[in-house]
Image (cartoon, rainbow, N blue to C red; front, side, top):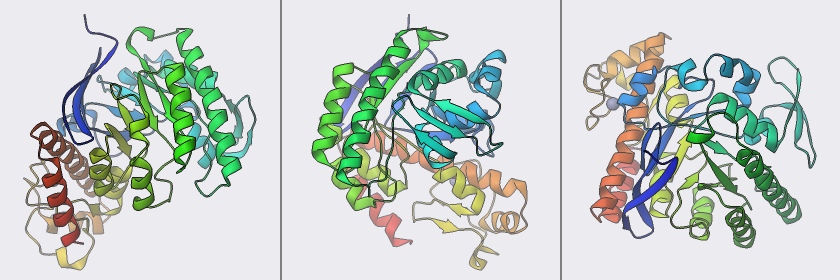
Length: 376
Ligand SMILES: [Zn+2]
């Protein structure tokens, strides 16, 4: 019988690791990139095509789904997996980040966050207990603890008090998770380390989470505008404060070079809207850096988006055709650009896993960065 949740590290190279998370719904090869399926869809892609790109797991957003179509409705319809037609693992965020960035009239208290929906103005409360309940109703396989976020530019006092509240909420999230509920046999819970860019705050947060005990640990509160150098500075110490034998998930990251650098610093899991959102605006990721397919220089370019890419888009259509579709506002343009970008990210993760397994990560990463920068 498959364990509820296990993480096996197969090889390490420096601080980087490659391994497998095993869950009832399938294996997740790490380092892993999770395409974002905000509203029960990875925008412009069918689930079978997401899987064909090499994705083992996708992410769903609690905040969006609780407002539309509603967690209870998704539950009555058989849960997120059946509803959207994705049968492999799903990680859901706690809603904490979105409620604080998207909702209107938010009011924070020790209980949780009261807010008005950005869609229709209805009033809701998101608390640790309600967040866990919603994630269970959705049928999430990896449930995230509910936390409080403040900008990295906040004062030290504000950062410290938000981190401490997040740790009290982490305990309430864990207790709510342990109280059981639907799908309890096939889901896991991750805690989220906070503490902005401060090493001491990060250590206090890590110790509090380890004391509570989680299946995996996320690094939260980064990639919010602090810049790559500051983020890497934090990642030089933050992953090492978390248990070596558990997966580490860097939330909301990021650009290809962010991911390569974070993998070198010991991160195992990522999610980001960048490949899907960029695909819808005409930006393609390539091994020679990002390109904007709307640019006139691609109007008669008969080559593929990325000559080194083996995706269904690059092996079938030219830059000239994609340029035309995107310029004409054709739906297929957004679909094909998104599909290529998701493949680019998944091929990059596969390359990182192979490089770690073969002990050549530094050479791979340096080569990746040099090619990527050369085309920019
Ligand atoms: Zn491609």
